[in-house]
Each structure stands twice: as C-alpha cells, then as structure tokens.
Length: 402
Ligand SMILES: *Cc1c(COP(=O)(O)O)cnc(C)c1O
Image (cartoon, rainbow, N blue to C red; front, side, top):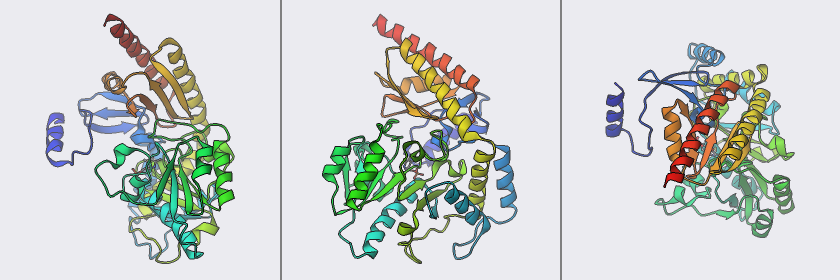
C-alpha cells in the first residue's frame, strides 16, 4: 500500500514538495505512525502547528460535537464559536478586534491591507510602503512573498509586488536610516522561524517599537510561528515588553485545522469597515470551535508553562551536545522553538534521524529546527538527544577517515 500511495502521489500531486518516503497514517500525543507500522517521535508537529500533539481527546471531542451541530455559515451571520474565540484572544492579548481568515499568508495579507487602509482613511495615501526584514518569511501569496526577505522564495515569480523595503534583522540603526513618511508599517517576526530560528538581541524589539512611534508608523508582529505558546509565553512579544499595533496568527491556533487571524488595536482595526475585507471560510464555526478548545486547553492544563520548562531542559541538552561535537556551531531559540546550527548541510541528519524514529526538520541548509508539541516528554527529548549524539559521533569519525 505504501509504495502504491507514493507512486500515485508522484502522478497526481503538484511537485512543489520534496517528500520523505513514508506515508503517515495516525498520530497520538507526540508520536506518529506510518503505514509500515513504524513509529516516530514528532519534533516537527506540522511545522509548529500541533502544539497539543496529535489526537488530543479534548480537541477531538470539541470537533466532533461541533461537527454534529453546525459546520459553516456565511459571515453574514453571527456564530457563537467565532465570538468566543475572538473574546478569548482579546482577553489574552494586546488586541481589541480580530479578523479571521484561513492561513498565515492570508493573515499577513489582511495586516498589509489594514495598515495601508488605516493611512488611506486619514488622507495619507503616500504612506503605503512596508519595511520588512532580510531572511524573514511571511507566506507564499504574491503580497506575502514580496514581503519575504529571501530571494529563493521570490525566484521565478516576477513581477514581485512593489511597496516593500528590507533591512537586516537585529539592526535598529539600519531601520532608523530607512524608515520615513512613506512607510505605513514595519512587519517583523519577533523570532525569525524559517529564517533559521534567529532571536532578537536584547532591547532590539523595544527599539523597533520606539522607531515606529517616532515616525508614526504601525508595527506588525508576525507571530504565526511564535504564537500560541510556542516560545514559552502565549505570544512571543510578551518576552520583550513590547506590544504591536497588529499581530498575525495561524499555525497552532487550531492545532491543525486551517485558520488565520489578524488582531489589532481598535484605533487601527476601525479602518476595516463593512466591505473593506472578507473571507468565505474565515472564522467558520467548525474551525473556531476547535481553536477555542485549543485556547481553553492551553490555559486549563497549564501547557505553556510546561512547554517553557521542557524547552529549557531541551536547550540545556542541545548545549551539552554542542560541547561534545564541534560540528555544532550554535544553539538558539526560546521555549520549544529551538534551532541548532551546524557547520555542514543537515539534510542527511534529518534522514538518519527518521530511520531511527525521530522526525526533525532542517532549514536554511544547516539549521536543525526542533518544534515538537508543547506536551513533549523529557524522556522523548532524551531519546532524540541520544540519537543525535550517536549520529554526530558517526559524522565525526567519517570526517576523520577522509
Ligand atoms: C508559516 C508561516 C507563514 C505562512 O503561513 P501559511 O499558513 O503557510 O500561509 C507566515 N509567517 C510565518 C512567520 C510563518 O512561520
């Protein structure tokens, strides 16, 4: 069956993904099972999506119950799950209003549109450009890839949309030099995820906030990867004592059902009046009921604190590995968004880990990224560390032989 599914996929699925030769069948907690009966501890979690792991009983229950009640109605009408989810997010963030959509890219599209509309409404149409960061990632739609600071994402898709300027991440002076009355917003990930798990230096985000305020420019945090407890707080901005004007969420918000959200302060949100923006599926009852249960479960089971402690433990273990293996040049990240930079291409390690029953991920060619469910257990981390320890030792001896 496995070979058949893979062969058929090669015939019928767009070839945009290089997939590992495995067919996943089911999951429970931090473990995934393939069609050959192998199990894997999941340090990818759908790319920081399944923060509560797979087949969480409370989520399954909430989803089944909503599935028997109401799947979808148009946003021409009110529904309870949508309102409850928005209220929970507002009670737990800087924001006053929320626009729901279906993905991270769409949430960023909404943020881009809102920041332009905000100034347009005040007659400041010249304030339309957005400053984004080099090595950032904001999505694959035309506007969000244009806002992404990585050439490989844009290659082949010219004409790239106008209106985006780039400065290096962690360089406040470069931002200060670039920003002007033509800029409606600065768009930034508090921690760059796809760019290689790159953290802000102390006070950098505070300085970015001050520069925005000095210039009357809005600040947008893309927390699509860092949000919903990933970094040890509900939102990463809480670590840095800075609040944005607009924030985007997606990935972990519904633990795997498609959802995106754009959150904003009232002052800014009010620029989105009736007809200004819309989405057919955005905030649909079936998805928002699941997301609401995600939020409630994070809070009721104290999962974010648990994840932060587990993240600290994991980080220590990775730092131990770094002491033993000179091929590891850096260990970084916060909470359970961790990266380990190598002095060689990490793809082979990903494949070798997979053969030993661990799913990990490699970005920017030489950064191993670890983004397991926040409910991952210490023993599961220990097992991965033992596996990596062995693999690095093997690499070392094979390098010495050459
Ligand atoms: C994944 C991601 C996106 C894009 O989200 P999609 O749901 O794939 O459109 C945008 N920004 C960041 C920081 C991300 O990690």
